[in-house]
Length: 409
Image (cartoon, rainbow, N blue to C red; front, side):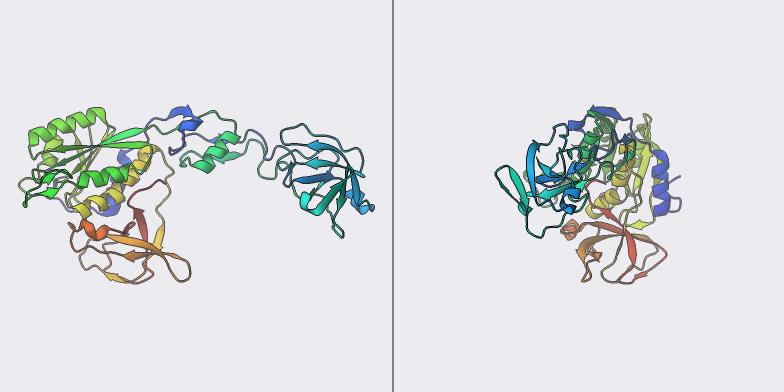
């Protein structure tokens, strides 16, 4: 495919990327190092949960039959703390003091909260008029799930709740996605680092740092920026270094059809196979994607700041989820908060801000920028929605797929 061939659709570009990538090999790590990574093995219940009839309140454990027989004052015969083997109730006129989380003592079938009793002279007296029923304030054994139940499937992001589930399954180590790195090359004689003196004809280097921030919103990835001048030989040398040292390569700029847009040629000279170049979308039409000889993916993004972030949100971050082995669920859809029109026969990657409607529904407020260079216009936005090329008017309420600027699955 050459740059003179027709533009491909957004859907086709996505399909090409998906077909070209596979998840990186997994590794086993201690559970303490698993948070923020993608789970790569099923987690099976070690035991039923709870593994015993669990007491839910501090108080006393009794046999409810005693209350039914008229007993209101129960002799305290012991104390059952969490972590202790179950005591045995002597008879239905006795009780055992109980702590939250403890196993229910044998021969008991009810718990009375400490607030509903009074204790004196070794006896616990029920509050006047209090009724007691079997099973109250008891978390029955196995009521959450049975032994050997599938608790977590591969592909989920390991957060605090998932860590708790994995620990409950008795796993000291777990199979997860590896930590990996991205190299970001942003060629340009006109680009000046923040904090450095700048001339009137120059601009600040920001695209590579914005992409790095988006990538590092995944806590299992580190991104490295490699500033380089507009010299094909120096860019080629940096490309080769990144492809040796990092797991994926991202370039920003010099990818269109202009006289100085040499990146596609340099990538070919470096042995990177082009998968496609140019998509029927705005912003970001010159987007380029390929695979290096060593199998590492290469994303060459257009140089305009809005295009860079839109393409990163729509293609780069979803591709990263594939590499991590994340759950392949489709992006969720959001209704537009107001109508927009887009006459060109191109797909539209439209910046939006998320907000709740009057009825509490999450909506996408269109936040179009002046141009693809208006990066300041993205301030306060949360990501993009994808609007199809075969439609020009999008009414309020139109539901579109949403892609955030960053953050985990």
